[in-house]
Image (tube, rainbow over all chains, first blue to last red; front, side, top):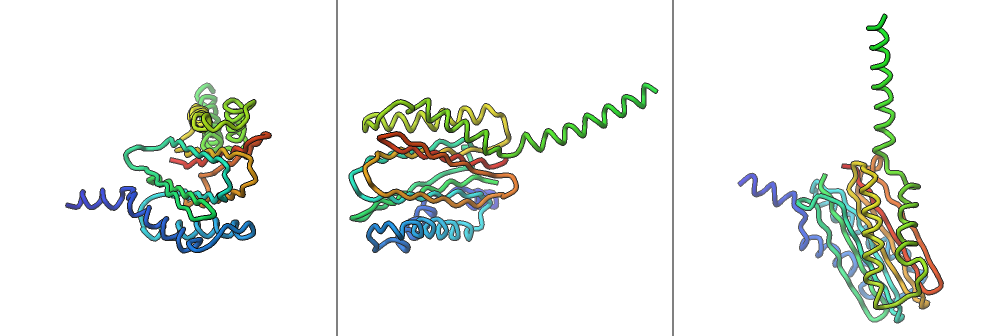
Length: 113
Length: 128
């Protein structure tokens, strides 16, 4: 039983982290329209809120959180990421969110210590 | 006499080892920056934005970066992300925040552009 619990506590829980990201994005820009002079503050708020919640989980992980906010203007955007890590313990999670005026893409990478 | 000389040589070797270890295990931003620029130039250097090729380009950039980084042979885990965006007047903002060990981990971001697109590559290195 102890081993099972240890594995759960130290695994990268994708669902839990997805919820944290969605909450952070909704809270920060949920009801807003794209505004050029506020976008800097929004991206900072999203990553900081996400990171705060993640560290509160208290798991033995290092985290990297990235956030992209893109105005809906017909431009093409493509992102890719590649990781050199420990497949058994590390993980990542990406959430794509949108409203009428902008897209928001948040990625979280968790690497076990 | 010979015994003493050997001891001195051994001491000198161990001091050199400590010095080398410090350099080998640090995240060297300039080195990584060069690797990124080379990978981007190699993958999309002379090209204009084409929707049906962007997928392959982003993949090539990250794979090229990662293989060069692993060849450095340092005790790091790496995360490489690449964004390619068409120049269309749209506003784009990216931010990242990291919860890591400030003394050993590091990141490097390179912004590249040509007439038709922007390419932003970030590399994060976390010491094992």
